[in-house]
Amino acid sequence: MPLDFKPLSMMQLRSAPGEVLDRVAQKGEAFVVERNGEQMACLVPLSVFMPDIQPKRLAREFEQLHAHNEQHSASISDNRELQLHFRRQGPEEDMTLTIRVPHGYPNTCPTVYAHPIPDHCPHRWQDGSLCTFGTMEVWNPGKHDVLYVLRLARRWLSHFATWKQTGQWGEG
Image (cartoon, rainbow, N blue to C red; front, side):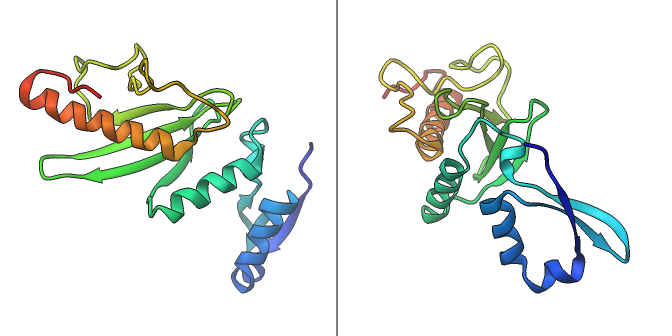
């Protein structure tokens, strides 16, 4: 679907930001934001970057994260995949979990990365992603979501902490 960008002044955006965002998210409108006649930014639906993921699914998952007070930031990868970043601060070090929501989601499961993690750390795939789906955890697109993946990743971090202290990976 081609985008028809409409001009939007900074003043219009400031006066009704919720209305403008609803038009983008719900109606698929796209805007070029202008200030003093200069084009500054674009507002486009998230589906532009992820055309094969239902916007309602993403909205529901963002609402669920918000309902569970899960603070995150978002970015788009070089492969135009949604990345959700969750920062965890601890007594020894700060850790960032990145959940990459792939094209084809939810029929394709997300991948999770943690930073910083030593290169020789076990229970990771060749690309560095965490091995969160073991024999007991199998991705089910009708049942599982980003919040489920986040919980598995946090359990992985718990095992990682044990491994750092004891050299043994936790179970369960």
